[in-house]
Image (cartoon, rainbow, N blue to C red; front, side, top):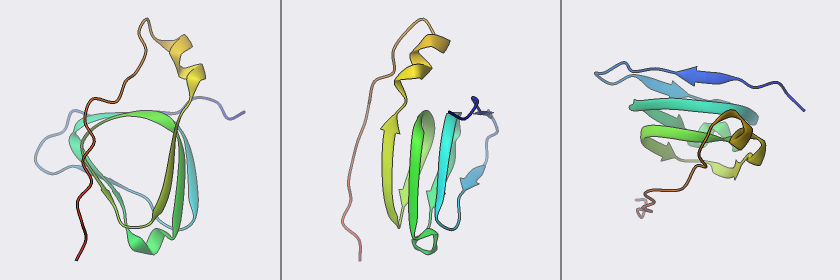
Length: 89
């Protein structure tokens, strides 16, 4: 199992996190003022994580999994607070 990887940012003004290629990610992203982008060119993205984001843009096939072992790092569990799908084109 990979070791834990954390991304923390409180930047404002359009900070972004982008992925490319066929990729996988294990870790925690705490970036409430940032945009996380998975462009169509990424082809496929898979993530085992928890996320706090300002927004999420998904243009490629993506799979998201909550890594239950992350609950050992905090005193509380993570829950989905908002989900909205918008039609494309």
